[in-house]
Length: 399
Image 1: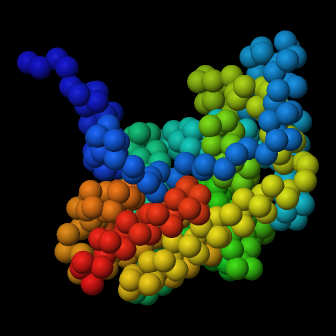
Image 2 (image 1 turned 90 degrees about the vertical axis):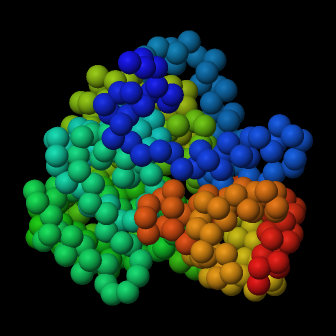
């Protein structure tokens, strides 16, 4: 019997996880770079802009204090939770109790994964839109729950599809996980959507988990609402946000969960077994990020807007028409008709091989992501212009 399995696939929990589709393109990208090829990576959503100096300066100051190198609190230091509450009040006019309704997480991804683990039992069913950011689906699988995908896009009303999925599912679903502005599709919603979602959740006894990671990254006058702006949302839901995108702090790993006190108590208790929280100097710097001048956020948004326009306007010149997104740091593009039959993986390989541009194949985000690719706006304008030329070279031959 073979004792070693690549990627740990011989273990039960690993066998429930599907193959990592993005790894196919990543491997080809690394091989091309080893050959000396200049690959423009618009695949992974890894922000490239610098963290604002005033946040870094506070980190340096806090690091020099020996007391900040001890174990921190798994649910986050109280002053940061107060800063989170103040931020919600200023931004959304939502009252948050920093003691019972907020938890600091090691990025939104860790917090969401552990919240699902803390609140689900084996076989519990969770509704997740498809396509979706992978952790939204795989957190359910890791927790031993059962995933029910609901098509996000397409004909008809999303809530009708949600109702159909709820009625046809047994055992009855326990939770729904959503994220708007949406990664990967860039879809945005208004407050009425969340009002309907809260009403739906209460009627059908569902917990709501909302990932607001891109709440600040919005364009053209659109403002992303918070789930918690809905009256009664805290009765059924928790919302995650992060400092990664708004303040260009992806490697710092600091985010927070806000909302239902019972769900957050479960998250905090589980985290107390796993970790001692975020490194305390990072939490202190996070207070500065939330409380001080927000011009740095506006500058980041403007940079992403310019990159979005450069990419979409450039592709339009060769007949690849893409609607400009109102939110996120991504562009979700339907594959041009002459290449549609290839599928998103082979089309992504073609762009990499012939255009020297790496993108994410839509199928990696779920079955209903097939036929699309996702561009991440994580290179400067000059590099994106270069990427446009590479993509144009490929697309011109097929259109």
